Length: 309
Ligand SMILES: [Fe+2]
Image 1 (cartoon, rainbow, N blue to C red):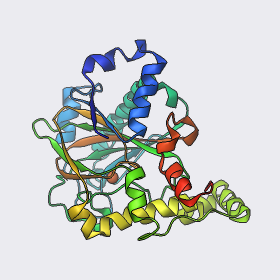
Image 2 (image 1 turned 120 degrees about the vertical axis):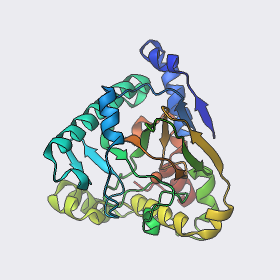
Image 3 (image 1 turned 180 degrees about the vertical axis):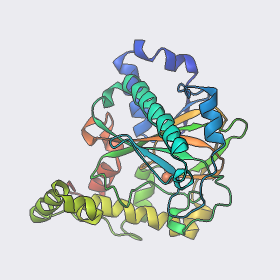
Image 4 (image 1 turned 90 degrees about the vertical axis):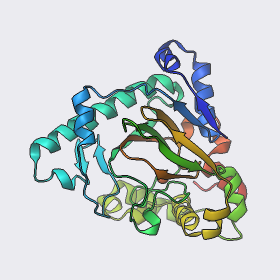
């Protein structure tokens, strides 16, 4: 596991690269590597857009960790600062919409095995300085964790995130830990119970909830045993002071102007400092994986000895 550094020329040549090359990049991501572009392949449309983002002062409300844009509804959430200023709100929405489209277009060519096998999830703008943020423990970004969404169970889909440090001068400082396949057996089942395979009745009930409006209103109804484990594991890691102080870790500094991609459900990560980053999340279908044995679902199924989904 490590950092795979890709010069900008690689990104520019993406469309001419072979499928085999694209499969290799997917494999590197799925194994728990981070793909880093020291020079981001995506640029905001104008310098004024960047200045606009750098000038935003986001509310420090604990209700919203970040400003987020949802492409499916063309809507922004967490924009407390803009609620009283409709022009600023519309401009922010336009910038994030354009950014989301650019990243999606780029990755459609760069990670071709995932084409049409993903759901474009939220686009976020992280305006707040990460160092010294006051957040409830389970929402803290500076503690090592794997991602699991409390309100959006993925049911085995993978969480792929594309980040971009848009701070003009400062790096974004992360630490990462051992990937899920090494970490899970250290704690499960001795410290945290493994997920139990669902009965056919439970699966039918969950599928019915997913199809109905009730499932959207009550996310717990959509959560599979896999989702419940991933959420418990996210909380367990953040609450485990021994792991936080003594677990294996590597420091990574993402320079200003860089972009990076990572499966955040596989690689434990924490951001220690940095301000002003853009991020696009994709939920990638399990059947699109080129190295499925590295997925958290496959690792858990091998520990349990049965299929979970
Ligand atoms: Fe995270």
